[in-house]
Length: 289
View 1 (spheres, rainbow, N blue to C red):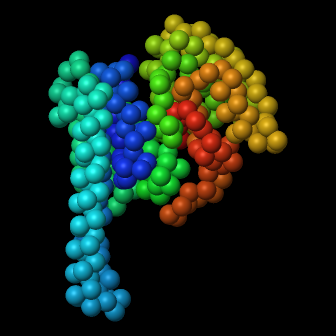
View 2 (view 1 turned 180 degrees about the horizontal axis):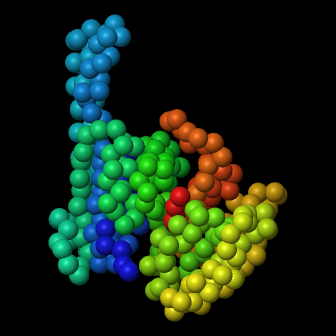
């Protein structure tokens, strides 16, 4: 099994830089294609405001301003993408079937960010999302939620600072749940070419399901021997203990299942451990539901 297609939604140059470096690094690592996606606001959605007492002239001004701002942002992101791809020696252009060289492309679509990203992510092996704290990008958080809950596919949260490597030392956060198993399945292509793997478990984190020893046996069928580390919560914070264990192992990639303690309308309230990892992780984190 290999990874052939990555998707990277970007919305601002402030948050896109590190994620773009991650995407290009992975494209080179797998000789795969990276599609960088920029979603612009659909100006047709402004028209309904006419019924809210706004004049047609004011609505026209709003549409013009939105289009102008979108054009400027698209141009800036495209320039960043082109420069980064050239520096990484990744060919820019459409993906070529059966190609054995990395490639990348830039796509702009109009619509609702979370909807377009979720649809596109359904046909990507892995979607890379900029860290929401990088540039305080609200759109990055929307993209993360969209992929996790509406795509059925895995998401890779990029760190705030571009990493030197991804997938050389992999930490697998295991708690026995179906979500953790889904994340394990998505990280297995990386595991098969890894230098070292460590399964991280904790009584505070564990749920009914297969044990860490059973996970180790499963991984061994793929020709990889994994170690097991039992970690403890730090100041009653399981997420902090998990990240500390991953850091002690020297992981540059961690997989984990994501779950929520409440349903969402527009905003998502994630479980405590998941939320802590999303906010504090300094390495790439692969998540599934």
